[in-house]
Length: 544
Image (cartoon, rainbow, N blue to C red; front, side):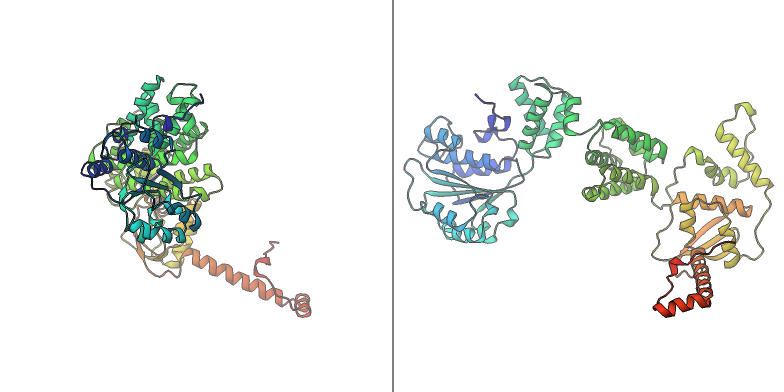
């Protein structure tokens, strides 16, 4: 005998065997018990939650020959129950609407409605994926559906109930099936494995139940694959390899480095993950799940995972929400990215680059930037001398701190007596800034400088720089001017920013070069003869 997949082998034969859907089962059982049956039922819900299965069990209950009335629990022994289960009962017509969408198919189906059943109480029509019917087929069904003969029952199932016309829905008793909770899927899978006497571990059950995403059939299909992949047994490593998932500890390590703004550590952690040859989209989904758990614990204190608790304490809630949004946005655009690995890497880089602007959140600074932390520390502001320790016992941070304080005490002030826009632009162009910081602050216009406070103005459409960018900028300007500087950023119309002035200077130089070319008799003759013009991008200044 050929192998039968688990989803078919263990398909429920009574309502009590159905996993979940208690609200639907209770309604059907009460209808049968009190003999208050509707002429048409619409079962709607996502794939694999029991729509067709419940409809078949319901059909057996209606035509079970155990008693004179429909039975809440079918006997599964009479001719009607056996034939309905096998799909060959003459009064139980199961139709796949996806393959019989035309109006002629529907008319042919409804031709037998007027005839009473020969060996059953009801003539039952089960129409699967009913939303696939054409508009003409629905119209042909309407009148019969509204006033069917007392011996006819319509059962319809659909995964896209919104595509079913309202005129049809209004004639049906609609039953919406819910997705199955992971715990119920896990328990059901465990019971089947015990019946099949297959070895398993708990982690494998959790992985399969989670990947089923609320569908009991998907869970059993994955279980069949996992059993075949594991050669008759379930081991977590084999299941992870099959599903393309990884141990959460790898993700926790990655998130820890992101939380500490440790770019090098995050890159190494991500490299460990990519070496496992996993699905990059699945990795991103696990990252989203981790931030979701962190966010929940920060509000509800409901996690038992020690690593989640530690991350929830170390990451500001605003940062958690920011990283969650970045990951979610990356997932939404994942399928349009030509390289999945690059999409994942860019998501991590965005998390490292962006921090929310909040007075209550202090930027996390890497050890290599500890000089910046000293610059803004209370020790520096209050001019408190650091504790002197023997040179051989000083830590790296202590040596950096002492060096910064000594430089600040001996540095002469380079502050101009009257700082204006022109002198500020000159100072800005001489600052030792990274390319990104220079590009950001070059768009800001000088407003004023007073009481060691520098006021700059940015355009309304520009976002505020992050705390990390501000810190690097303030360190560079403080070093240049020989005193500690604070910064205020206003919003408004920007006219004379360093970037704008540089663009104006370049355009002026371009116009001068263009005029010089036009004064050349040879060039003028060529332009006049061929009706040509000088392309701006083609003008290059050649140094002598």
